[in-house]
Amino acid sequence: MWMRPIFLVIVACFLAWHPVRGLPQVEEPQYLTRLKAKLFDERLITLGSAIERIESTEEGQAFLSSFYSDEEYTIFAPTDQAFKGYGLDSSNIRKENAYWLQDVLKYHITTGKTRLSELPPPRSHTILHTLYHNYTSAAPDARLDQTYGFLPGGDTRVLVLEKDVGDAGNALIRGDTWNVTTVDRGVDWENLLIQKVDRIIPFPSPFLTTLSEPLISTTPVGLTVSRSLINLLDAQNVFNDASGITAFLPVDEDVAGILGALVGKDRGLQGNMLFNHIINGSIQYSTDLLPSKSLITARGETINFFQNDTGTYVSSDNNVTANVLRTDVITSNGVIHVIDKFMANPDYNGQAAASAYSSAVQSASAAAATVTVPAEATATARQRNRASSSRAQLDLIILSTTGLMILAGVTILV
Ligand SMILES: *[C@@H]1O[C@H](CO)[C@@H](O)[C@H](O)[C@H]1NC(C)=O
Ligand SMILES: *[C@@H]1O[C@H](CO)[C@@H](O)[C@H](O)[C@H]1NC(C)=O
Ligand SMILES: *[C@@H]1O[C@H](CO)[C@@H](O)[C@H](O)[C@H]1NC(C)=O
Ligand SMILES: *[C@@H]1O[C@H](CO)[C@@H](O)[C@H](O)[C@H]1NC(C)=O
Ligand SMILES: *[C@@H]1O[C@H](CO)[C@@H](O)[C@H](O)[C@H]1NC(C)=O
Image (cartoon, rainbow, N blue to C red; front, side, top):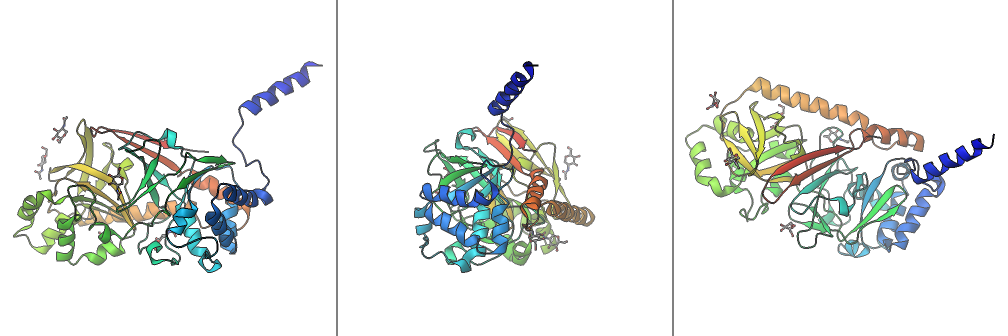
């Protein structure tokens, strides 16, 4: 008879040492109050105030209470100094900006706890999915405005995180013209990891703007050949209006080769050559560029990937192989991978292009069905979190200095 209580004590000790991940320790009504107190404690006064403003709308309340769940999240928390850089502090962050602040916050929160100590070495990066989808509201400061550009279906915007070469204890969130740097080593609070950063993470630029940026050291004025070709073909709006686009675009070093391929061709063939570098309707990050995977271009041609000791390569149906020089430059409606060659494939398969586009759109809307805008009750929020956790992917990509690529997709399923 006396063995039973002992058994229970043993079980209780076991559970105490091996806690099952569950709801936060604090009770739901106190969750947000305690979170704000924690942020104020951490001297994140403006962020705490921003959360108070977000709470002033019904939608904001529902969004914030969805964090009381059994999911874990990382908040990239801009310091007061970071807000001040844009003239914002707790006294001038207004209720009228609640929807914008909510978008900003969504863009600073990623699923899972991402600890700096667990990142791969410098020159490798990690793709983190945020909670932010599409533009909803204008910013109080034009420099922080969201840019025109939509993602397909339920796709969420990502952050590209990597260890700082100069100080491997820190990490950088990389953009086309900016880096945001972490400030400390992160603080755990309940199901959240609060990771301070030195800037508000800028929303990504429009696709065509990014083409003018020095994306790699050998392209100080951007990818001018691609830009000129887009202008020549009057295709600006095709790129502006695309909802989800993946582009493999060449550096300008091979200008002679590019001109050689284009000169004397009619606009139709020139268009095919350009759009055979584009995947229409879907966003493929570096983690998707796998040897086992082929993609169909906007002109219906296939491109394939392979890796060897010198790096990652993409090859087209016309047997041109290009080296991928920089991956995952994020734009407002897609992603750019910089390659070293123009692939110049003039072929066009309309049927394959149309079917690739429609299956991209279909799978995007299927994804959208599982990730919805916050509703009301916490119970439904928790269900929603569970649904979205199936796509909560921590995609890891390890790209060593020699260019050898080792891929690991770690999927966190609850
Ligand atoms: C984002 O906008 C695109 C284009 O309008 C739409 O297809 C998609 O469903 C939207 N996604 C979300 C989550 O609102
Ligand atoms: C951002 O960091 C990367 C990697 O260290 C560096 O190559 C790049 O020049 C930095 N960009 C800016 C705008 O500071
Ligand atoms: C994608 O396909 C749609 C439908 O055919 C077309 O209207 C659009 O211009 C294409 N966009 C790109 C970037 O190729
Ligand atoms: C990797 O493949 C590329 C393209 O075929 C080739 O140029 C390069 O020499 C290869 N590298 C090695 C180490 O085999
Ligand atoms: C590409 O290479 C394959 C295999 O060597 C060959 O069958 C095909 O005809 C080539 N295609 C072109 C367009 O040169």
